[in-house]
Length: 281
Image (cartoon, rainbow, N blue to C red; front, side, top):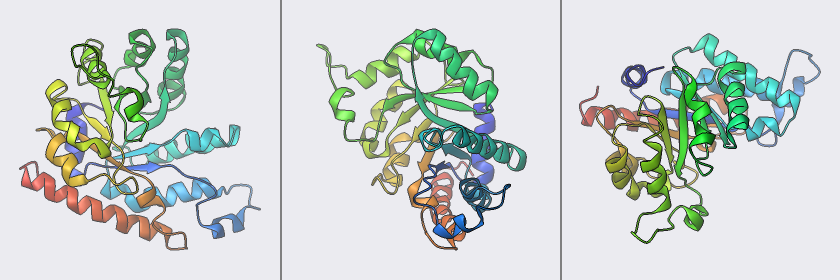
């Protein structure tokens, strides 16, 4: 999917919402486990499908967090693969993000890239940049695929390293942004920037004005959509704003899918207003 196609989907959907599929078996409604005697039924996969069907017209992207699947072993990988296949078969215009946070020496990264781009049909995978170019470049060798590089994360521990300054006053996350521009352009690289660091987005945009930013931290983590848009939006939107728990766990009852839709719809309406205000729709 090209940047232009992604922007067209944003305009068509009037949304730049990414729904995080961080599906935890201990948090989905208990009644979903009642049919587990059926050989062709899995409660986690059923939950994912219901969430997807309820929100597909309100978002442009889905982001399964790989940890929530690989913790289940082989079966978890099956659920993940079937979830991606379900999106591809039913909603082919959706951008699918593997939230895997991989990053290793080059030959290992090449295997990770094969996993998510060949064995599984993801559009992008989140990658840690701190082992340098040779650990990232294998992910950049796929046409139509992106690397989503961790730049400035939303967690409290981001201050441990990412804000460290060199003698010239350049912060580590700024060096990551500047250096990575030599590895790929805006058609190959996206960046993770946490919504809880929204005040930094204007400085980030000075370094990477054209790249899409994946912005987690809206909702449960306290990030402000208004600030993200104010400081981070560019002339092609340039934002994929993720909400996970605030949508998929909006209800723990039998109305979970409808509740997820209502939560997503609230965000979509806010996003549509932002896009209209900036003349994009």
